[in-house]
Length: 183
Image (cartoon, rainbow, N blue to C red):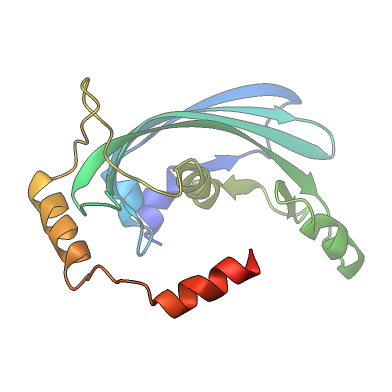
């Protein structure tokens, strides 16, 4: 990861008083360029973070909203896709032991930091939260008439290719008799 871009998302928590602290982040193209093979090509996302510091832990509440540029799974054209979501992350302080690993592995939203650490970088968490807020199938929406906004030329070629080589097969009457006997 490129350190300069990632450092923007580091929070130093050592001097923070107990209680709630608010942070705002803006995500742009340079953020997504840091992550190799990212399916997001560009984006404008605002992130609001509430960090609640407690004696032995912190609770991080993320909220995000914005637009990302992704490739359509149907026509392969890049389009703007809205993203929004909320996620809670628990940060515990202490030593991670082998006994804890089984218990913590069941909780994806818990991070254990060593007692001697003084800051946490949130870039990887933010990236994963945004990626997970995307649908499994990313396709263009529809216009007001219900027509797909996908590239029409590509869709026509796909339809032509999908019907290529298909032949209406007649069924063998001997098999039809056997199917009727089963029923």
